[in-house]
Every structure is written in C-alpha cells, then in structure tokens.
Amino acid sequence: MKPPIDFYFDFSSPYGYLLSEKIDALAAQYGRKVRWHPILLGIIFKATGSAPLTLQNAAKASYSLHDFSRSARFMGLPYRHPDNFPLPTQNAARAYYWLHGQDCALARQFAHAAYRALFVDNIDISAPEAVLEIAAKIGVDRRNLETALQSPEIKERLKDEVDNALKIGVFGSPHVIIDGEAFFGADRLPQIEHWLKSGGF
Image (cartoon, rainbow, N blue to C red; front, side):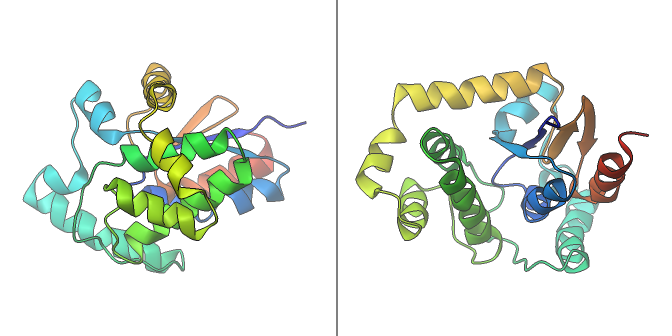
C-alpha cells in the first residue's frame, strides 16, 4: 500500500481551490489516497510573519488577482473572485472535521461544495449560516452540524491541525506533502505528477 498524500489548504485560498479540483483524481492514477487538512491561514500567517497575497502590496495584489483567474482558465476550472476576500474560514474547517469523523466521502463532498460556493458562486462562507446551508444541500443534518460547530472537541481538532501544520513547515495554501517531499502552490501540479509517476526525483 503506497503512503497517502497530505493536502493542507484553507477554504479561502484560490490556489487551494484549484488544486482541490485535481489532486484526488491525479493521486488515484498512481494508487494513492489523499488526506485533506483544512487549516487557517490567519494563524499560519501570524506565526510566519506573512500576509495574504492581495494585502501585501499593490503590485502583488494586482498580479495575484489576475493570476487567480488565469490559472483557473489554464486548468479548465470555473472561477469568480469573491466580493468578500480574504475571509475567515473556521466554520467551514470545523464542519469538515466533524463530517470527516463520521463519513470521509461526505466530508470531501462538503469541501468541494464549500470551495465552489466561494470561488464559483460568490457565497460568503465565513458565516455559520452559509456553511450550514451548503452542508444541508448535500444531506447533512443542519441542527447537528450547528451544534458541532461550537463544540470544544471540534474547535480543539482544528487547533491541533493548524499547530501540526506549523510544526511540519506548512506556510501557506495549498501545501502538499508526498513521501516527505513538500510542494507549495497549485502550479506545482506537474511536479507532483512527475514525482508520483517516477517515485521521486
């Protein structure tokens, strides 16, 4: 059994969204599974002294906004830059981990739905109500999830995931680790494929 791929991402990351649409299918081609790890870039950036691309300086912000859409076109994916950006995503991340504890496939379905809600349908996923609505549409019990979003256990699980990400050197989204090798950014997809195909390089 080949070891799994670890995929670290924030639901507010445009490049995380792009890679999320490709990583599972690519991994499956080479007999791998992917472990998804939602994290919170706000905490990561504070710990590493960084900031969102669109908030660093005018030149980088302008380039990044252009590149988000260009990269989506290149990868054949729909993209609409959200009106509210960047935004906090702890509710979506908590929902993912709660669902993952019950049904991994449903958690993955939710992750795709949340990402597409933000970057295709321009839905502000920072609000708990939006997260509950997205989950309800794929058959999740709304009341149970609403309770879970405030549970100490789920809050602690997310905190532990972020702490662990920092310990292993994650500094942004998407961050992929294969066989101990780290790849940062959706544009590393060709390198990821080559690594999977060749067994390392």
